[in-house]
Length: 370
Image (tube, rainbow, N blue to C red; front, side, top):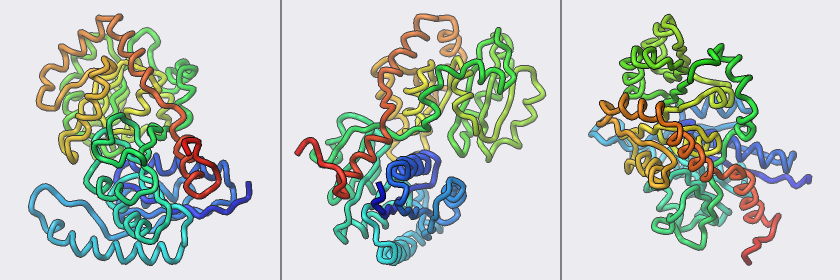
């Protein structure tokens, strides 16, 4: 179709906000090649690099979140907010979008606020089981809210909620057929079990320290490790590459092959990571970050733990790690149950479902519920 939809997308700060935004844009572009896109992010954040790399234009706002401690940044927050609202107004006026999409992050708030007050259709893509205050406030005027978890009517207007799941990389949908390719790509030993460690796009200090202190434990149990340290920590930990069966990576560009090669996974509990891991279907240990708003990573992980679909270890309880990992390693029935249960929670068509909602908002598709 040649309809020239104009789409304004705001989201960023972490990969968990950026990659869903790009996935949504890619799906719209697939359906409407003439569509025009503009992203809005926060200046000096990773979206200012990742979005252009994906082939899209982006404008940056002078915005950041409120820190938990009293800092100079907190004192400047009101000025940043006013500046961002003013800039967002100029961006919306100039671009004249048909729809505005927010995937979370500092910049989403001002952009969606302006769009909502202009009567432009807006869609919130809420990745977490416990939304932040910005999306709670924006939800009152949002046209549609796409979510990945049940029971979010506690926070959002029930009639606006659509359970779609979170967008994931499409190459993960065929991960089951890529195991041999993954083993070859990462130069792994077929006879050994493989542990994949992912601490998020920026890395996770506590997770990295845990893995560093467990190197001898992994060797004793014949475990080989693919360890994504994050860009902040690679210099500190790359010397472990000299150890047998340990490989460190700042970033894993071939994530599908890493997932395919893994027998076990240790991960933070960001919403996008959880959505990917549900599709991958491997036994997973979540170590939620305690340094996030509303402790939402723990809440995300608990939705799986309550369904016997994953293991959770809090940062304050990492001294239990070796005992819990050994129990998982030696219990094939537990491995099988975790794999089955986490895969049962997968929503592989999330991106398509979200874009279906966008089509409804701009009048290109009728709402079946009406």
